[in-house]
Amino acid sequence: MTSAAFDVLGIGNAIVDVLSRADDSFLGQHGLVKGSMMLIDEARAETLYAAMGPGVEISGGSCGNTMAGVASFGGKGAYIGKVRDDQLGAVFGHDLKATGVSFETAAATSGPATARCLILVTPDAQRTMNTYLGACTGLGPADIDVARVGSAQVTYVEGYLWDAPAAKQAVLKAFDAAHAAGRKVSITLSDSFCVHRYREEFRDLIRTKVDILFGNEAEIKALYEVETFEEALEATRKEAKIAALTRSEKGSVVIKGSETYAVPAAPVAKVVDTTGAGDLYASGFLFGFTQNKPLAECARLGGIAAAEVISHVGARPEQALRSLI
Image 1 (cartoon, one colour):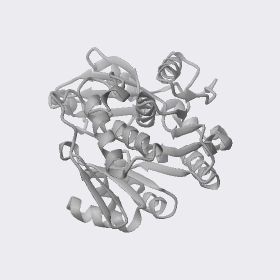
Image 2 (cartoon, helix red, strand yellow; image 1 turned 90 degrees about the horizontal axis):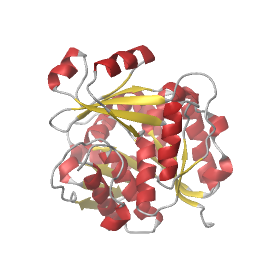
Image 3 (cartoon, helix red, strand yellow; image 1 turned 30 degrees about the vertical axis):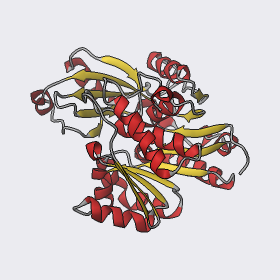
């Protein structure tokens, strides 16, 4: 394999998160399912935003968070995602570049506003997400720089991109470009609701294109329509080349063929906000993988990153992750 300009190139929905604390009655009042991610339109976004308490605006997006984590470990990252040339678009671009991630996707000059995700954090640290995709839906094959994709060891994407047909085509173009260059591709299942929407497509991808699969316990059980994690593990083993499956406080399990590595969770003094736990786990795992670490060590690094991000509000690291290893 030729040397890579980037360790990881991420493709995702470029979203600015607005986090606010709320109680269960607020969720009920607005018909929200705790712990889920719902897609909403601009009008619903405005209504919810008006009803929410004081919020903190932080650049997010699942894959954007992962890329910020890779950079925090000291890895070389690049990102492809679509924003509008508006205030939130400028915030997103500034925040991501400030972490050290290369971000060169041209901003849209017309059409919907930059995406935002309204995240309600309940006292049990669960987060309920309401996403207006906005400008993200403009991401398409024309935004994929084939040479750039080919210069990254791993191209990593979020399953959420399947919600926009043009973005899905962009991902498939990137996967082909990565493989043509002898590189690896990776996907996260994103959310169990997302899995229900695209189960057959995801399974086909895992069998035919994906080199590294990420998912949590709920997502992997939803993918294979089974009751237990053990059943899901064996079903995944038959289809995935490498899978890293997270189980919250139970840590994670990595499988590759007949190999199985169960890695305990890193200790956390207090869980404050679980937003971004899976995103940061992926960052640690991919950083380790691109540094040729053993799979169990990749999982350990993922656990360290997840533990850091759930110890505070917001989905990006506050401490330099390289200082924790």
